[in-house]
Length: 259
Image (spheres, rainbow, N blue to C red):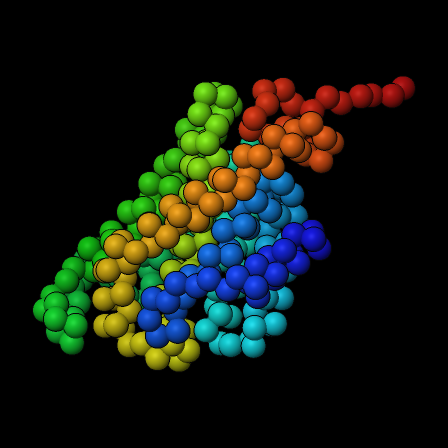
């Protein structure tokens, strides 16, 4: 855990690749390795490691208020990937679903049946449900992809190994994304108090998000896949993956009894 957390910090410091999306909002590419944490360490140790790495990296880069709301985002990436990979996909599905539903009650899209006037950004009227759909369509796709991984993961891995890992990591990065979007939109204290954005600016940003976020998450999933495939091949020949009841094998761990 310490080694992986240090790796997260190192990547954040020596390769601080971030994509600015306005008003202090950025997407850190280094967060993609949280998927690897969940894969190798499992959902709970992996999530804790991602949280430790993200918190330490935030502290070492100045503890700016802009990064504080998103410290938990890599943790959810590792958690969801680990839960799916170690055959606890129902918990992953539930957590992902709760975050999606919770977003529907945030100020930018409440009420769903209402309409917002965005004259300041050149859009006279837009329905709130449309804003929600723009934000959630790729997250709902990621949520739906959990099911084929859960039921056909081993077959997908045998026939199309790279597609299996790419899909798994896409889901994990989307979990990162939905948490970031949810926490950012949850309160004026965050989007206005920290980032200086009014509700109209937030709604406009959410409308244009489908033109940016899915592409970034696909790129992150691709990079994580390139790292994971050779790593897993090596670790499969060791005792490192202590939980043998993962998605790539059929049998459950053997148990012994003593009398």
